Amino acid sequence: MLADTDAGSIIAAAQSGAQWGYRLLILQIVLIPILFIVQELTVRLGLATQKGHGELISETLGRGWAWLSVGTLCVACVGALLTQLSGIAGLAQLFGLPVVPVLAIVIAGIIFMVWTGSYRSVERVAIAFGLFELAFVFVAWRATPHISEISAQFLSVPFSDPQYLYLVAANIGAVIMPWMVFYQQSAVVDKGLSLRDLKAARFDTAIGAVITQLIMAAVLIATGATLSGHGQGMTLDSVPQIAQALTPTLGDAVGRMVFAMGLAGAALVATVVVCLTAAWGLGEVAGYKRSLEHNLREAAWFYAVFGLILVAGGVFVNSGIDLVKLSVAVQVMNALLLPVMLGFLFFLARHALTGRIRLTGWYAWVAGALIVLTSGFGVFAAVVGLIG
Image (cartoon, rainbow, N blue to C red; front, side):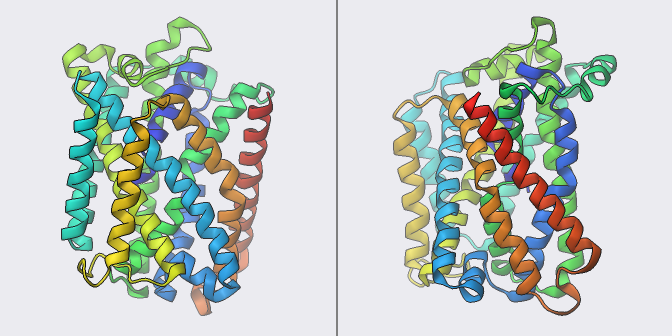
């Protein structure tokens, strides 16, 4: 769940605060229960079937549908990986460091960690990275936002403005991510959990949903508080600009360091998760061994796919793409992909589960309604924002 607040999500939240103040804050709160429902269904499927998402779709609906789902996953993973590595490249520029060596060191370190570690060791390192994101909560507190301004803008939502809707779609796609469904279902299986762990896994997911949205809200509040006097419609065009907008109350040196810790933590944990997701997802449909508990010889294709995706992402990032525009666009793309991913998730929860853990009754109606509304509104906001 820490990976859910990745570098692209933080940039989308910062852009939201810069352009619209606190007008997108309500969305961060509304998305908490939706995020929990989506990921709880994912956990339930993994624990009950002991199969990854792609593998379960293949068994339930056939390989054609599985390849469609994994194809959607790969598109989302590529976009997400580029935003993570672009964020790291932006941090290198922030401190005047050469981008290529920094990316090479980061990529080599991640590959070494994953190729030589077990699931639990990789998970612990990734969580350690991700906890640096809590620095943004401190930044928001130091920004001293005015409660009166938050109250005035909280329910002031200009739905008729295409630019606002574009960022609504970006925020939805930044929170309900297609690759998170694949990752969490595969992760609970690779971790060796079973239905006995369902209650603890639900609690873990609920806490994660609150924390990830607390971080998103903190970034939005910090930029909104800092830039509220500059008028509506400001845009942040680079990582250094975002750093300046988020941390002026901390001083230049401390502010840059705190910002770097938060963004680096977000980017690093998400990089690990995104590449593992792609390697797991492809393996579930292609049929190769895919576990961090296997060594390099036992799961050569799994580790090769992980490494190749990461290296290819690093090469592409050095082409000089626009980080901020790319990050927001990737989140909008995620929103457009939601009907496919959430449609598969809901179908599996209804048809691949049995007994007391099958999605039935009033909870099925609530989950189904929220999935339809979230997917539909995300696509609507994205289309209107793109056209407008």
